[in-house]
Image 1 (cartoon, rainbow, N blue to C red):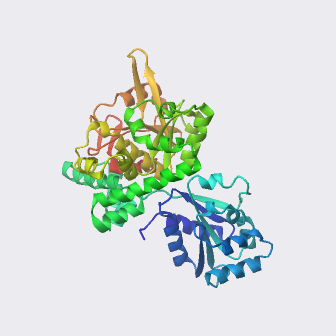
Image 2: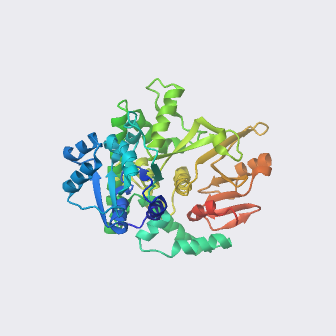
Image 3: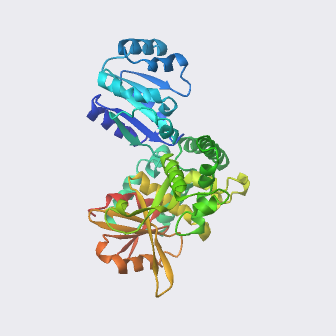
Length: 450
């Protein structure tokens, strides 16, 4: 098993909850939820039972039909799984709990009983669809599990030192030098290509073969699309999902939903519902337009203007060329060797969106026009920090030109804490703009006092 940061968060829940709540770990399928939860159970408890509702027999599911006698319930459960649980030193795992909502509803009674701890895992929006007729337990805490971030990817490659060194350099704001930066960028581009899905990372470590890694990622994408079609038989969710790369490539003011779904009659309310379902899937991240770029961005969120990003950039790379054979997917070679054409620079934008999401940020962007110059400008991302905002512009080339940031500063200088350019070059400063190589992006969220 790969080392995952969420392990320590689960440990904090165990210590702080002391049996008073259950833990629900949400995330897209194949992100590693089941693996980390079972590993946690093995290490942190004397005994555990894992009920995988995708394969659980009816004899187990039927136990949840009548929870009036918990002594009988626990006795039967232990007999079924041949595990003798220890009071207050055992955990029962409800894996893929969305497949059997009655088990989730039982959490309230089980937590109140207090004998054991409970951890649930859930995937995709079916966890939302399947709970409309049950009582959601208030005793349930939630944790979001994302694909492996860059640091976790480095850990998987047995590199435990690079990220600490990068953190020190970020804090000092001293340049690496061109040669070292090129090496660090190549390492990060490798992460962009492989991505953070554990199966893909394992395939890369095992085979060092991009073709086989790509096959794994195609399987995951096909799985997601099958899930979308099960949930939405019209195929609209799958169409929106598949259109993410092309829509980012168009560099418009937002995702053009009606153009993607031009064969369907779509109202604004229908679009809102579809985007909400995509967001709930955890496969996609949504960046909303902030109509007023000020502190408390959520209050100015425009639900009708948004961009969609893939939660995992490695999957994004594969989705971009999913309709072609791998041998035609020149993006692997070009990206790894830093020969990516400028019209594929939105891959870096997706990578930044993934990093910002994994560090706990909601995504917002802002567009505005200069009437006199007859030009439109866009700020790729805006973060809210303390009582100020931090605009971010992502550049894959021509990083010395930053007219959007400049015009934004003219309009809102009193609101701005710091300005950032995320690019592929070394650390530098342009007036008050801090220019960072993309592999330092994750430290922006931690830099309030720097």
